[in-house]
Image (cartoon, rainbow, N blue to C red; front, side, top):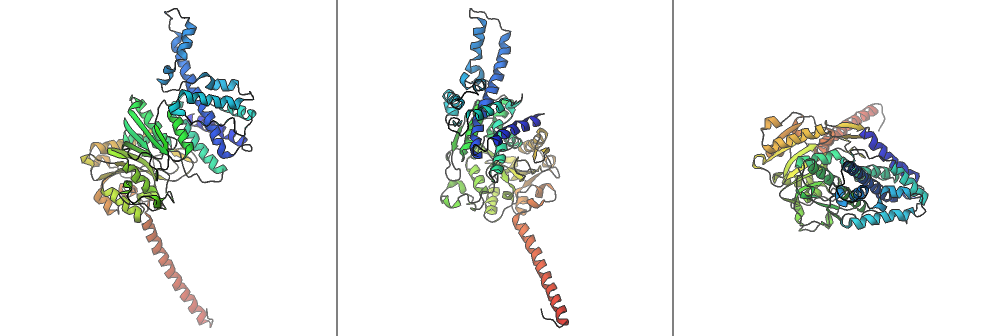
Length: 516
């Protein structure tokens, strides 16, 4: 039921975009969607909370001389009654029902822009310059805007909307659709909810500083806040820091936090060359960076940049630029959990040397091999890395490897997810490892294995889980150097056979008095 609701929700949004494609550039429509869906969602949450308050007040007896209706109306407009539940209080002229009533007005664009201004005035630190105010200037007439308002009005977010990363989900879906429409490859991806939940649970985020230097739509922050809420921990105990290079996901991240009554220091900038939090040392670093980023700008890195103590990564792949960036931003007892392309587990040359030094410094806590199709738009298989700046004594010089490629639930032809059961199974192994339980209890053939640094060294400092848990390596898990060695041997064999065959053919022709 939830799955159908989400798919229907996204499909309706795209139908609206597709209908207006002749009037507006496809990339511009993203901003139209952002503002309207934000206004729709905050009103949905606001009205839901308002109904709850009405029910609670319905049975209360008024003991003073204020008429009951006046007292109730005052209570229903009490801003603190909403903010205390992590819900934004929405000014009357910014509410969705006000937009619906005025949808057919010739100045509806101005009405929408004014609604956004009212929200900015109400929440300046959270929403100033975040929601695009473009409805007066965009090339859409009042009928088009009315059509969009009616389309979004029909969307039901469902009872469990608080537990969904609404903006992240929209961003993920639209990113793929716009990439298709614009003829581009989707090079950046929203982090699937099951991955952010898994990473946040393995790190056991409770309070302190959490940092994501490639924060996108803020999915990791959402999962962390939800974990705190489930465990009854005040969300204000978590201090949020984020950096994002693109303006659109930066806006979505700010909105995502605002929807949950949270604030964060989210800055725009290129983390490679303009680290906005150079002095920050975090308790938790979480991230899903661009994979295999070619031309990331190695030549622009200063020779004394302290982040790259293990070596400067090659310019044709930025994976180890990110990994070292995470390590640099860890507090003395900090932990990192991030998504990474599988090539980083086994790549050689400069990357191999950097990985070797990181392993020898005993920073790697655990590696989880994930199934393909976890991302909505691509089938690229990934791995999860977990690092610790300082390991407990009983797990020093040891790494937990988990092969989770067979743990998934198919939710569509193009996507799989980790279920709560899968997440619990993986997290439990990390808890056992962390507590120092006997390795015989942790190890599970084909799934989990604790390996020491000597064993990792014997494997050429390759971190592919399949090598350790006792399964046959898949093609994408074989290191590049090993593949090339096999290919080279096979090619040499084929060339030798070709040479011998050519020689025999020439001999046959010569015997027939023909020269070749």
